[in-house]
Length: 277
Image (cartoon, rainbow, N blue to C red; front, side, top):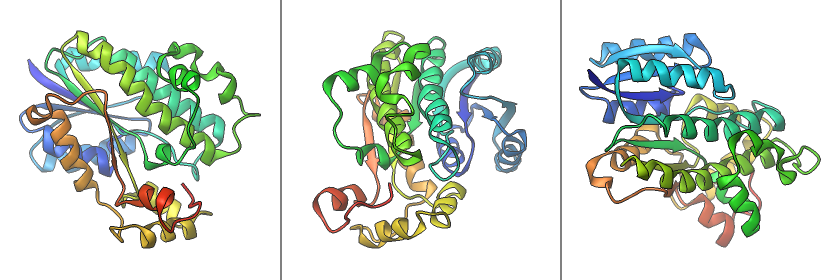
């Protein structure tokens, strides 16, 4: 049986990571939109990777469990790349919390039951989680450890407390890094590792939606005002993920890696005053 790496959300970032860690392994690509998964499979298959395709809705426990079952049927699940999500310009606060927060917690829980010893995973969070003002110790712990099915019932996640799609996105992405920190303890009992990457503006279709959306001007200001002075590329995220998922990252788990060209540094300590996300 092959070693299997599951890629949830095989867009530009998911594919970039898969290219680096999927050689000689079976890549199972899962997306809510079957056309997206098939398009990614065509690209990867033409580059010599062994690929299967399925659909998944990360906000549905039933479909996530079906994905786990399919992956385990293909071989030993040695890797998880979770890059699915919706952005503030694409969805309502309710949908963002259901997909980006609850969905990630659900994926971590279910794959934490099947990941094999020596396995590893990465979750793609966002620089937005680093832009949220500090939460209380109690709120941090709640985001990290509340049982998955109770997570969306937390008082500070109710829609009368969430000020809009951006706020929901920031909460979700802060929650992702906290959840991974807590899940690293459970994954560690299986001899596996899990980390988050929080990219800044990386040139993907999602980023282009933001650049042409209502916050496009603030996004351009973030790029111009950052120390790097440019957007990132999916391949750069792939390089960090390859470190985290490979043997050189064997001592790294439960960590969050901010890679945003210095936008967050400029937001808190430089010339970027209240950028879009």
